[in-house]
Amino acid sequence: MYPVNIKFFLALSILLTLYISCTVKPQIKKDDKLFDTHFLTKKDYLSLDTHRLDELTDDQFLERIQYDYTKNCLIDKDSIAVVENDGYRINLFCIAIKNEWTSRQRGAKEVLQYLKEYQNAKTVQGIFPRSFNRITGEKIKGLRYGNFGQPYDVVGTAFFATSIQFTIRQFFDKDNPVENDIRKLCNSICNRINWNFAYNTDRKCFTWFKNGEEGKQFDGKDLVGEMDETFFLQLLVLGSKNWNYGTEAYNNYVSKIFVDEQYGYRYFSTKQYDYKNSEQFTGITVNNPEILKLDNYPTAKLGYLVQSHIWFDLKGYRDSICNINNMDYFEGTQNAIKAQIKYAEINPGKNKLYGDVWGFYDTYSPISKKWMVTGLPAEGDTDEGTISISAVMSAIPFAPKESIKCLRTLYNEFKDKGIYGAAGFVMSVNTNSGKLATKPDSFFEPISVLSIENYRSGLLWNLSKKAPEYEILINKAGLKPTIL
Image (cartoon, helix red, strand yellow):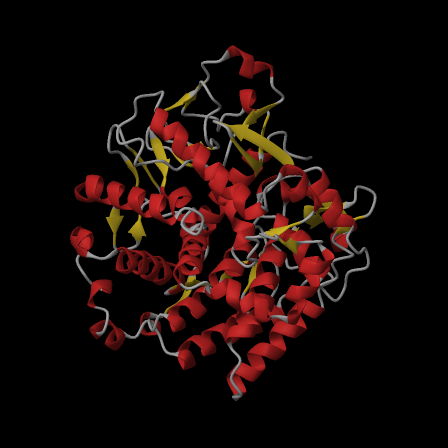
């Protein structure tokens, strides 16, 4: 059965990821030596007391966030691999080496171990199971993913494949045994993925999962028509070895893409399906009765909008859909951020700190004690005052000045309440009460690190452009540089 509320499905994904991370998987190692403390003599701000981070420059503040999140993600490694988690986290070794938090030799050794585990995983035509035993490569008996059982994860596989093809393979370019093996395994893992098998030719789209016997069943959300974390999959396959359908999937995806507008800003967006019946649609008061007549509640959700920009630098490139809408995909995300900021400046709910503070995305509400599937409220509606800190960090490459100001305002206001601890920023804060969702956003932590690094150095974008597949996929997608 397909979930009626697709955003409930994604909320379930994140909650189950947190559950697996925190309660199910026995840890197989705790690698305290990964982060070489002698580097901290050059960067003492990385060990500064968490109540004194207001003393740091903006760049030091951002690096401190990256450092704490990266430590939290990488020091503990579990015996069960969750492919969507590892797909983002493996990039963190490149960030750690580049910023001199660890040695290149140490980071390369760890990356090679990840790749060996994924080479050993029992796939179906190269598509990884959502979770598997790192030692045996087998699915975990009895560990189910909601109503989907033990599916093969098309999107998670794409996360991992994009990371190793466009980041890992390019970064580890030295001629030595470990890095030579890294590049060989990157190519081997990517080349065995049969994207044709993952593609529904009848519906001209991918679905989130392949399921059932030998993964023959298409299951989960149809991946078409929304600017979310699955957009990059449409680009990835254009440069992939095992793909026979040309631009069919990409053209179908973008031709149906949802365009929304709030406060005068137009953007490529996601949809809030069946919001009236969603138990997760909390924290927003619907004041405009006309909104109740809409099929989809208009929202701008930054966490979804930013993820396809992690590997691919789409600024200044337009395809036919961009030309029709007079904005590229980067500008579309910028416009969504501007709409969020404008709402916060108007502040219809009279929430504390709004204006300097904004950031709306699915997160845990410290007020309702529920997972929220809310983004930016529709015009005329108001929210409870809960800010998703992940949303703010994800916006840094698109609106750095406003994002950094928001983060520093939140830190200064709530540092005594524990908004920033040893693991970094908490997941969310209610600005009116000061209540916190104290657990870090474990899924979004690596995404925040990568987003910040693209702002600070453009590392992932620059690495991706070195990949021979990059120019191929950009040209096939019809993405052409804007003539100024």
